[in-house]
Length: 327
Image (cartoon, rainbow, N blue to C red):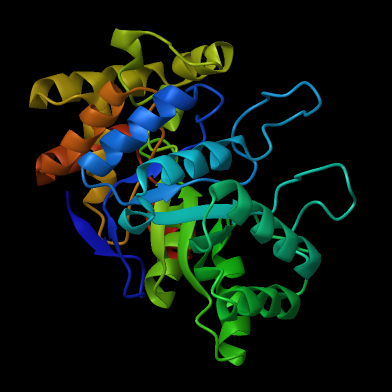
């Protein structure tokens, strides 16, 4: 396993992160335990979750409130592996029917953090991430709430998810005015077929020292060899529609992967990892076999010719803004 710093922080994390969104939804508790065991054995130390992850498991809930975190907590208690992992989770999404059971008010941040700690059966969260931007809560309130949690030793670092470039800039300006470190990472959707963050999010992260953790590195299965292997997702109809939309690119992509003798998933990850701004793509394996295949991507070094072909098949927005569209 390779390791790198999480943004400008001194925290070292694995170049691949274990995403746990499928825990309790696609993967039951026993399978989730096996996946986490295999991840640690492979050297993965960055585990990413969210308070809302887990899927609809209980009849009185419309979402899987806390189930993924509960599974991780049980595993940590059983394995005693807390010191081996960097534990990340998120706050923002609705966690109940109450008017304040969501978003980023100081009220909800405090309660959500306490609830996550209880479900995770730990006394601290290493990376506490804002799952989305909250346009109605001022940064003074958000950062004050986060500062208190840091002072209490309940969280160590703070990250963002799904922020625009200017959101990141505003957040860091507000944090700097308080002499607070602010954000160290950003999670964004980023893969060969979705490259919009190259316009402003990646340049903002590079300038301000945030590591990037791409989610959906395989574009919901599109980049996993879908033409050859078929569609095996819970969103089969949606995936089938996307396959038809991108069929010419997919045919060229899978042909290129065959020519260089690599699995499509491994090429998709290797393409992300060749970018020094990328800290760790977030994997969402449903099985140990998928995890094992994904880890092999660390050994792949794509040639300049292959990178050029990938950019031809999956063109980006043309670089950073404003040059990408202004001239």
